[in-house]
Structure formats: structure tokens, C-alpha cells
Length: 99
Image 1: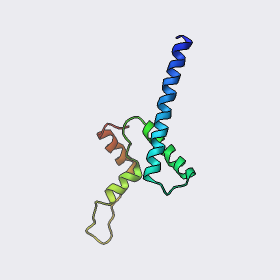
Image 2: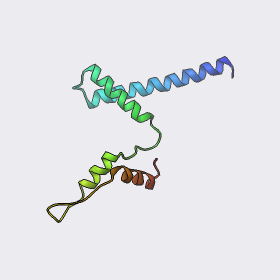
Image 3: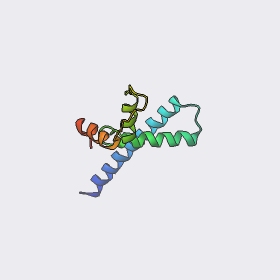
């Protein structure tokens, strides 16, 4: 690949990154005007990191536990329910095609 093509690819990628950063900064500024510039930067970095992930977000064991525990009810006074949240989260993610 020639230096000219490499330079163009770099320029294009730099422009896309710059555009994303500016868009996220604008969004964070509108959504959370109460934050200090340092806090806005931290939130913008989290948004960019989240946006860079491929695919959907996977369910964690803690989320699986929260989902199940919020939707169960024991009928006896001493409920002996045992929940394995890690295998449950794996099964849910496999069902929806996540790893």
C-alpha cells in the first residue's frame, strides 16, 4: 500500500474518531449539564467504550440473580431456594446467541 493511501486511511479514521468524540461530548453536555468537565469526560469515555463493543451486552451473573430474585416468591416461611446465577447467566446468553 502506498504512503498516500495509508495517509488517507489514517485521515479518514481520525475524522471518524473525532466525529464520534464530538458527538458524545455534545450528548453528554446536553444530558448532564450539571457535571463538571472532568465528570463529563469520564462519562463520555464510558459511552465511547460502550459504543465500541461488538454485539449486544451480555447478562452478568449478578444481573441474572437480580432478574430471578425480583420475580420469585416462596410460599413457606423458611425458603430453601438455591440459585446458581453464573450458570443461569451463561444459559440465557447462549439462548440469545451471546457468549
